[in-house]
Length: 338
Image (tube, rainbow, N blue to C red; front, side, top):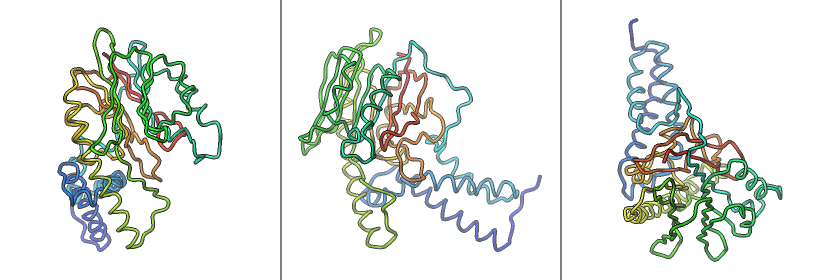
């Protein structure tokens, strides 16, 4: 087998596009490892990273089929993200066991309270789905307290709500030993937490929700004015997210227990915000998940912005992204060997 380098115009043109794609991946790598105001202004690029990465992978396949040495360029950018994969293939998929502790997280989009979906059955459908899956502890983001009766089968519950009766919720089969909330400098609710006992070990569960970009990809316009507004909006949100995650990390370091962190990060795994939390905790999806792990409906782009992190000493048996469309997010579950 002999590799060569085609000199045709078409190959040169393709490699020029490949260079641009590689440059964008390099930018994402920089954003994943560093933080600055400049990074904040252009953080939106990380949302499109899965598509950029897939295009680069297709270039690698193309050069490989043609035995072209330019495959080395594409391969370099594939290897760059081996510790933070876009797609995970698991050869042996370990299912949940009866002895596993089951934690589920779900951003329920206020249970369709304002009728984004033209149906009245969303709250009951969500409740029924959760009853079928029977998580030991359930954490909800964008929770609306008008629907708390749907979860009366949980003996323990804790809410963090704002003036509009919405916010965060934790429902549990386990008795709470302690509970509390974390707010930012402006008094905005950032997280709630509870402590409980599982097999003689005391654990803490956090439910965390970071600032949203509030973008609708279907309404984005490709003009200069709109692009500037998008960059300003996402840049400001990213700065807030960075401050929020710093506050959270400071708080979680004071926890005397092993921690389970349920979070709608409102950001992808290719940002510094993600890396700050992943530096100290295991990402359950990376440990035992498979596929893209997409949790949010952002057009055709597979976006993973919902996470279940655990302390390094906790063993992950199985991770599941639920394929159900009752919100703009998908629920996720982790089964733990505690």
